[in-house]
Image 1 (cartoon, rainbow, N blue to C red):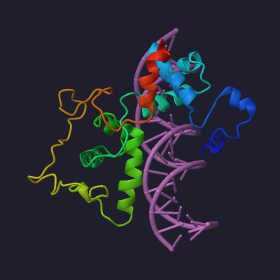
Image 2 (cartoon, rainbow, N blue to C red):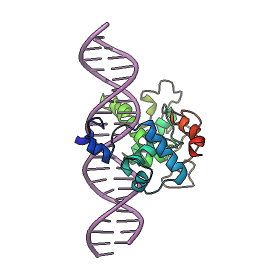
Image 3 (cartoon, rainbow, N blue to C red):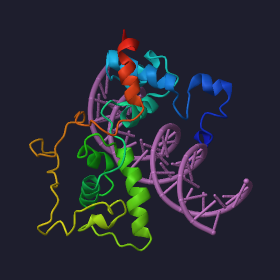
Image 4 (cartoon, rainbow, N blue to C red):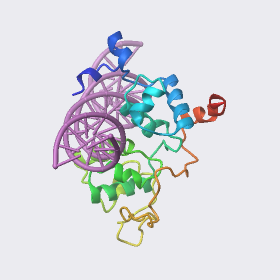
Length: 198
DNA sequence: AATCCTGCCAACCGCGAAGCG
DNA sequence: GCGCTTCGCGGTTGGCAGGAT
């Protein structure tokens, strides 16, 4: 699939490139998008893309913003607790990545999806039977101290959120800002934003 | 030292749902 | 009620980096 996207933007004709840019985002584009949203907020993405002067589709802008540029995006290792939650929620909801992501503040559906496919699913495929009762069997869990099934006394502090229940302790608005670690390069952009915005 | 393999991640695409005139 | 536009989601792909041989 994605035949025209296969070569990313590298081989786009100059004509196409003038129309719509594809492929990896440049730092310049990131800055434009960040500054524009910081000033005007998120709006209609297609309009936003045009108004900001980005030669990107609204879709592309949205994806870039949600998965990478948003100030509260958390990056870095999935913690054992998060892994546990992901597995639990996946057992419950299946591939509803966006729904699962909402229970993991700062994590994106794309990240969780990638995590699942590359780590958990692969493990499962290689004959390591998925054990939802004890997700710590999966890799990355070697450092985990948590043991036992979720049904015994060693149940981790995570609880399964009540879906769509704002009163549930795990219900988190999309923009919770509790992440103070695992920040990535874009933090520099945000640090710089003051003088870009002025 | 060179090559091959594997894992990870960013980005794109297609489709369905929702919103609006 | 209908058609169009936009959004959001899930699946998939391609490139890069690091490790293994």
